[in-house]
Amino acid sequence: MHVNRQEAPGEAIVGSFIDLLRIEELDENLFRGRCHAGAPMRAFGGQVAAQALTAAGRTLAPGRLVHSLHGYFLRPGDPQRPITYEVDRVRDGASYATRRVTAVQRDEAIFTLSASFKRPEESSARQRTMPPVPGPEELPDPFPVWEQSDPEDYERAAGFRTLDMRFIPADSPGMPPELPGVPQQFVWLRTGTPLPQDDPLLQVCALTYLSDLTLASTTALHLQPHRIQRTEPPRIILASLDHAMWFHRPFRADEWLLFAQRSPSAADGRGLALGEFYNQEGELVASAVQETLVRERRRTERG
Image (cartoon, rainbow, N blue to C red; front, side, top):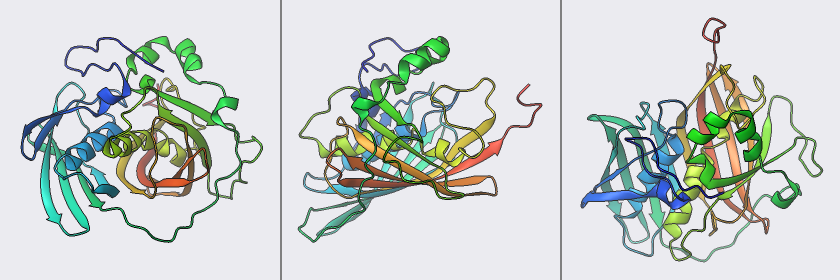
């Protein structure tokens, strides 16, 4: 789905998905970007992480590909203000390189990222088999439903509308049985506009953005079934605490990827979600883990 419109004052202009990853180089290890809102008045964490990874990757010579990242969300980001990304070149080894990035607003760190890069090498391979779930072409587009049910919220969500999503119903053929105490959801995702074929860093950064769209809601499925549109007023408070990813095989984020997600634990106001990304050929291309703040709003807060 392609969007081309002007954002509100202070926000970035979002015309295509690649605009969500765009950052400006201020100095050798210093970059600046803008992020749209995820929750009201909070920058979307997946975009902050993706821009931080973009900054890290731009300090390396070609030939090293990111294979893992670990990030911590420290403070809510302000979507009305730019974010500065400070890169620390921790190590450049013969095979591996490490970067640490701090995202800063108003002289305070809002997010930290550690990312590891390596040179590709040949080795034996194995993976978990992708479940035989329905393909994206068999599933409805949820965005028209969102637009009809909440036009104002849909119009504000310019960033999310530059991507494509297809939710797989729980009773679909081929869905793995849900284990007791382990809610799950399966979603097909891709960017809504093509990405350059010769930029593997951009593909990984795009998937970093996509990986933060539904993991948090997976941790709260036992409290409230997911809906792409927000409830008014929301019953659940969700916020990403930390996020980790591992990239196993080359992929394209502008082609359909199945995001198989499960949440094995929720306790102490926190939920854990595990996710696996498969391409349409059944290859496991990436894995993600996220811990999320999960709180039920008190009745007085919900009106």
